[in-house]
Image 1 (tube, rainbow, N blue to C red):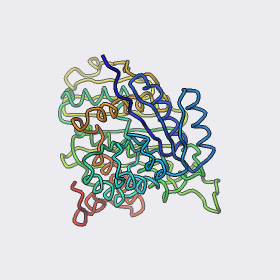
Image 2: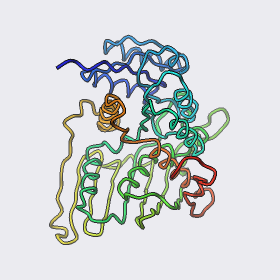
Image 3: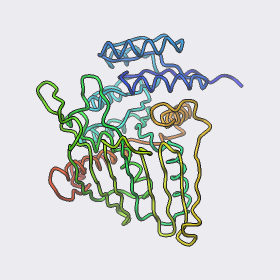
Length: 376
């Protein structure tokens, strides 16, 4: 069998997450991929990426800006892993560039609904390009197994989805950009779009309204950057109501390092219940009829994963899936599309607004459908 045609990648933003993509793509090199160029204005990040690439036997062209990278025509696929607030302009430049580039953009798609809509509308004019949003939690083996159980009907009609993330505080990023809502979109956009995406997937429905309570109670309060104290919340409860009558709840705490699992997901239907635990990689499920004694426990793994990395192998599987879509040349759509990215951001924005206003916020209010060309 002939070797597949090499797919050449460029990475825009080679901070911590960009270098994580670089490592994942190295572990996919047997599938006919190579990173050939990077763009980042931050020289120390460039140097760290170059050291990694050299250890992989890859020679990279380095640019300080994404437009220079695009103009060279060196790559077929662009991974956008720059700070959140830069996503919109970078995506618009890619989508408006004469040469088509397929795109994998890190979550969140953008920091505001308006910017997400702008990207969605621009992408409609580029049927020659695939854009996938990096909501890779779908690919974590225990989460993927729970999705399979739910979609298989084992639990019946889903009524409730509860997701708990109890973890460590936000990591330090270049120039501390992730300490401020204006840059991130807010914690419930930046971090929690993953979970709102999963809620929508489990519920098999679209969100209607959101109620949240949260604050910055412990973390970052003694930090000052350019005279400003961070404003990102470190804990929250969020309730999401869906148009089929189901409900989702997020329990977020970012000062809970003393946790056995970082994520615990519970999905309850009218005939059964399923749970997933990360990083234990355990799934439990049972039926109302069989009761406690009938609960089954599975240890989940995915033999395709060659590198676990920061997200338990999900980034590797995300790249494997997107590469398949790229190679299908239009016959396969991205598994996580721009609409998924838009709605995950919209729920997060609604939650942030709910905390600010102290009331339920409707998704229609956030999407402002009457003034948007992007259909919901």
